[in-house]
Image 1 (tube, rainbow, N blue to C red):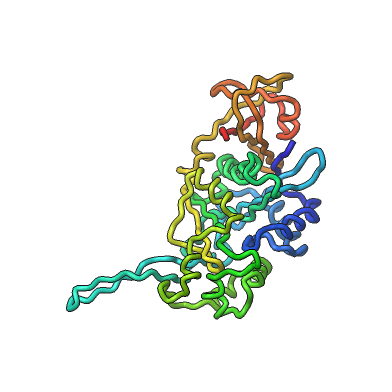
Image 2 (cartoon, rainbow, N blue to C red):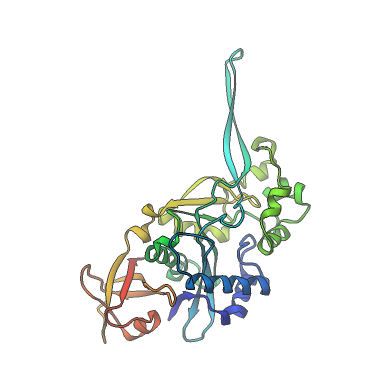
Length: 338
């Protein structure tokens, strides 16, 4: 059985393996032992904090095969983007100019460096083993974060965002980066992404242009990348789109990938998840497949399971499910249909 759980210090070697395998552009998952060790320490400390409102806390989850003990994926929530330093994006908006004499009004798209998304909760660090792509476990790895937010709402902002990795070639070249960022950083795309994962994002403000970049002046290949998703990032996009997330006018500063946005009051797994109490049983009459989690903070667990759920009645779970979720009779369970 596969279970999603909070990261632990002993996960460091396997987490670094996942980072090494992850898509270029997932800057929150650097292949660096020291950075990952600090990420784990911060996540463990966040679970121990008494939180009344969202702050700098981070919550890292791993997908583990309970039989082999192998980690097959990871994902993360940052409670407040831009809490310690600005969270930079490119705002993609139209500027309109007009001439009364010529009776002409014209709109031009322009990209402007901003930190408008400060204060939002950020989903990041999504990576899953290729053998599990487009399975229920991708849904678990992504959406269990939303069940965690539903259970511990005061720790998070009323609005949630995520950056989807933008297009780059198989050789690691990004037409958007080559047309924009490379002129200011003089670094290849992959190296710039790596540095952003290792260091403060403050260097972005120091080197990126402070004036609007007019989109029609960019090469067509770069224009085509604005809002375009890397093929390997499509699943992450699709899962959250089904949850109610929508694209907005912000794109990633490196590759032009889209930003998704949703209010927590509109996110399916938060609004429509059900609460039930666990009822251990020897046999199940499964009628549907669900994502389900316990309601713990420390010791959070989530799984995929075939169940017979009836609102208002105890939720029958077999011994393996109870063991994976670390629950007993009467424990609260949150669940939502796949």
